[in-house]
Every structure is written in structure tokens, then in C-alpha cells.
Image 1 (tube, one colour):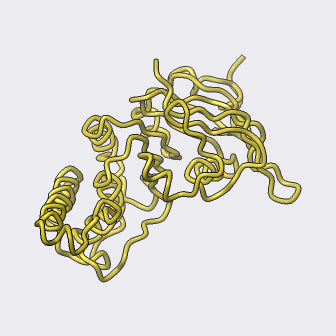
Image 2 (image 1 turned 90 degrees about the vertical axis):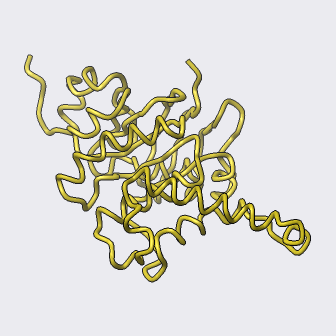
Image 3 (image 1 turned 90 degrees about the horizontal axis):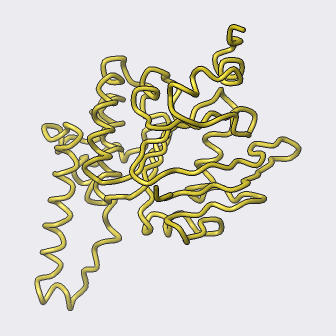
Length: 256
């Protein structure tokens, strides 16, 4: 099986606090991998290292076999096909969501005088609009395409952020608590939606999630962390029975 992301011995400390302490695991291409652990386990810090917002003190993060991500700025990681959803929805409040989805594709637009004369700029604009509309349809927001973000519920904003990621067609999606702040009914709808997006993009998903029924039903594999280290990894059925996971994440001990 091909590995799309290899995290090897990643360490990062803030002062005397070890946020990441030798984290190592692989993300197989095409799978959905869940990253779980209690608050303070280092999950979001690891995402920051993968997406370029933090630089590890030690270790390597290799993407697609030979691309070393450590030291690569965030915008270059996007061009390599890495997209990230943050914990909190972040949208331009007065801009329509269709225009937001067109804006995130701006790196594809190469319009200048020469291209305008040839009509290429208009062709690119049509393509960008088509991608935005396709993404809105995939997440079920077509009817709200012309609404500004300020008029959307928290759940709709999360869907809009997912649509923005879909519009740039990443190969690796980093989803940081996609169910954060949304209603239970919306959370239940996330599972089939995220699987549908993975299949549509032919992408790989690494997802941080505290909603156990959601992540256990969604993920092909689980990586469990605590105190900056990997406790265990494996299928959801294996991980949720692991005594260290029960102790560190669920606060209980496995029956002996």
C-alpha cells in the first residue's frame, strides 16, 4: 500500500513543555485516518507542523514519497495538494460563499493582458466558477451560493469551508474537528459527506475528531495520541479496546 504522508520522529517543545515527543506514523493513500486523543495530546500542533504553521525541532514529515515538508512554507504545501480545515470557521463575512470559493482558487488564475486578448482569462474564470458551483453542490449549499457568510449558521460555515477545500482539489485533506460547534443532526450528516468527498476527490483524509461515534464510523485507521506521543494505531475496533486508550482518552481502565 502506498504511503502519502510519513511522519517520522517529530518533536516540538514550547519552553520546557514537550508538545510533540517523537511522533511517528504513516497515512496510507486513499484512506481516512482518524487522529484522536485528549486535549493537550498534541494533535493540532502536529497539524500545524504538517501544514507549515509550526516547524518541528526534530524529525521529518515526508509527503508523496519524496517531498520533505519541514521548512516548506504553507502556500507551497497547498500547491502540492494539501488542504486544511481549521477548528474554527473562518470566512469573509460580507462576501458570498460562491465568491469565497472562487477566491481560494486565485493561484490558478494567470490572467494578464496577453491572456485576455486570447480569451484565456475568460475561459479560466468559467472554469473557476464551475469548480465553485461543483463544490457547493457536493456539500449541499447550492441554494445558498449567493448569500454572504454572515448569514450562514455555524454548520453551514463548516460546509462552506469544506467546499473551499474541495474547490482546490487537494490530494490530502487535514480536517481539524469538522464537527466542532455544529448540531448533532449536522454531525450525523458529516460521516457520509466526508466519505463522499474523499471518493469524489480520490483523496486521503487525516482527521482530528473528538466525537467518537463519528470518527470510529468514519476512519479506516485510528492513531491515538496522549502527551505528545503515539499510544497506538490500528483499526477502530482494535484502538478503542486498547488499555492505554481507555485510560488516557476515556478515563477508564480495561477490565482485566
